[in-house]
Length: 300
Image (cartoon, rainbow, N blue to C red):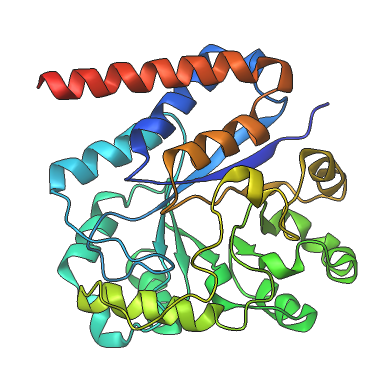
């Protein structure tokens, strides 16, 4: 019997067309995708939501747009997962009208939230108990003992810090909880970066203050951010390695790409989700459908 494996995709809002096409292709051509693979959620935010963290996203979305995008995923059996991981949130931010509107519109028992700060987490648990709550990698939990403590809490999943992806001691010790751990497979950030938490705080402040002029300068900002380079990173988990993780009980994998290019996204999907002999066909179908969607948009 094939074990079910869950993949969590980026771009809830900004890659909604790409994700919708992927979901349709998985339905139409199931034999061309890897056996047992399912989409566990699509994560991200609606633009301008101050609870958002990890990557600042500016703009706004109308109520009708929010409803439509949530329906795109939920109608296909896929949870929308909101990235409520702003590390600077205080109790006063809990009453934000826009973020609460998003939560109310998606409060149907199907959706999820990623959390970072205790203040917002407690508020969500009280006001929106229908949501599954996931502990975010933005917490920077990098020790075995801290991970064990996190897994003792009432989280649906805990996202493993990518610096621990290949730490055999950690992976072995956490095997009893493997089905509650989510692993980032294609992280592009520099391994062991000492300024990663600082970067998250800068993005959080940028989101809170609607200010794109952050003082933070990533020391690795000129690094290449394509999939080929990503595959060379120490935290990268290859398809061959993923099979061994699955055998040990790890069945939740996260594809990063929020804020990256469409090409990076598609390359990641082709590599991880599609059987090798069918990648050219699925890539062609996806590109063709994207082009058709773009032409239809231009005619409006």
